[in-house]
Length: 316
Image (tube, rainbow, N blue to C red):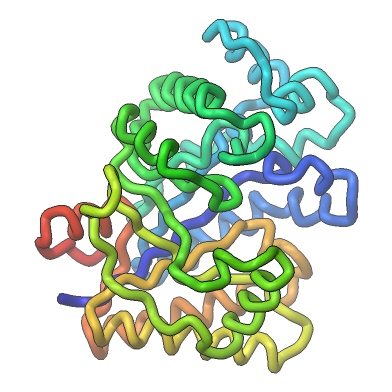
């Protein structure tokens, strides 16, 4: 089997954290459309696939069109995020809405559109019970029909989920989701997790990814391998991070496993200079592995189909 690179991108703007738009992070959010165009151009130049997990609510024209949609589907607003976006109005719309994103992605080659829920719903968070999760899925399903889409991949916001959420996804015809990497740190306290993840992003503490089995859960788990952070102002950190990622990709290419890299566009929307340097370095390394080892670039959907059928997925 050949190794596969999966890149998933969490598109959420200010829906991911309501405090971002009132802090110095606002400029990052406003630059997301520009970064999105740069990423799509880079991926197209090198024939690299990507899965874009979208918060459905961010694709509307503005709060008024979103509110009209909510009224039309007869939805009772219980989400604090949705209440804020629809009724508050005291925010920069460019931090919450990106109309035209769906069309832009649909016309691009080698792109899969996945779900990141309707409002960036964080499973397991206080007050976020299973019934509210079902309502999120219902809203997303209506939104998908209005955009002539059918998302079969789910990326859980903040990577938080429980077995009951996976079982519920099956009822809505999802076929795969992005799980968390196997690590001892998932059972440690939050500070220990952060220290471990930071150190592991620089040197190999958690080992390399192994092949996922689609039979362990009701739908296929295309587990994340590594989060790609923003470019650091410290060159040594950037060098260590890239080496860590490239080593993992090389192992996946040689062992026929999946390397799943993910990030947010706003992570890359800092200073103009060098904002995509890490992504470019990853893509260049992948192109070399594709030439030497036949490594393939696939979407989450393609990766899951291969696991389920144990057949070859055509490279992009």
